[in-house]
Image 1: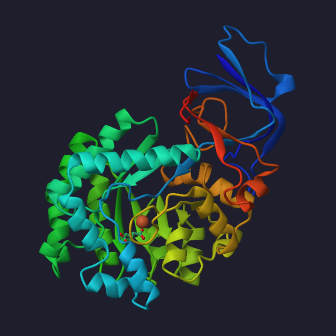
Image 2: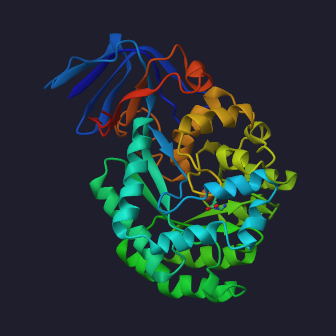
Image 3: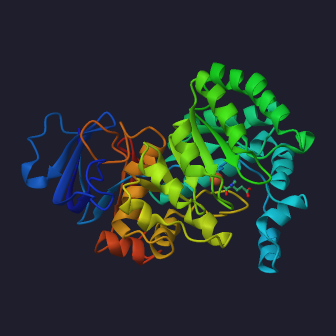
Length: 405
Ligand code: NIG
Ligand code: FE
């Protein structure tokens, strides 16, 4: 058993309570054994240890559950920094895509990259994320867009599950955009996904989720109905990229399809908000994408008031969110989207875990869950979020093992 003591304030972040309720414990300690928490509470009530291995001193730090990064497009090659320049000159994201840039360009670069290149770039990102206290990462495919290349990306994630300490959740996003070979033939491409990709993915356990980008120039709500119904037969739960650039009726569609999460939602309508509030769907705020694409702000404040759980994630990808900085996502979810620091922190821990259907074993510091946590030397949780970049995470642990240098 290992004990971590002398914690000034520990944030439990359980599912219960409002989104702002982190249930802090002052002068706390935790104990863990075989990677799981066996005690979380005040140090004064710590039971007498049996078979004590070691006692660690938190030196009055704050302790948070490891961040759960619930939406990334981790596997890709190439850079689209020049498109940033084009957008600054007035071109829109959709216009750049129509001219052969955008997602299709990353698809070309990703297909051309070697396995080693993709692997080392993804591993590098995971390492950089771990340093920030991110202990679980959702990884979407979606820059392969052919049977060969989508499966290759998912197999790469399966490999990283073994070689990296980060916990990985794999999502199949073969329906990111129709590939050039299928331009104007969405239904034919969806058939390929259904007949040639999903069976292999299910057989090899390559993904827990099936995601689809519902947008002009991508896929329609009917494509989503068709694809996610089949994915469910193969045991994959649903996710939606929706209402990012235009209103696609995302709230009602998410409720109808019973997806685990609906992500982006900057153009969610009032009716859509009511539909989400009347569902089990987690909304995922991706404030970096909104910021980089200058989208209107997600109405996070109103959503939380309506009782919708709002997770927070970076959306790390080369085109709309070229950073995996969780601190920046937290800050923007507050300043731009109207969350409080506490709400943002719950959004990046237990609610993000719920957006991945893994909240039973992570996302909060509760007995029986994984000992995934990190320490911060900040005066308060608000200072941690507000004073961006001033309070780096230290002593990041996954399953009780220290993974940060
Ligand atoms: O989450 N919305 C679609 N997909 C990504 C962007 C991908 C890209 O531009 O390469 C997103 O924003
Ligand atoms: Fe995304």
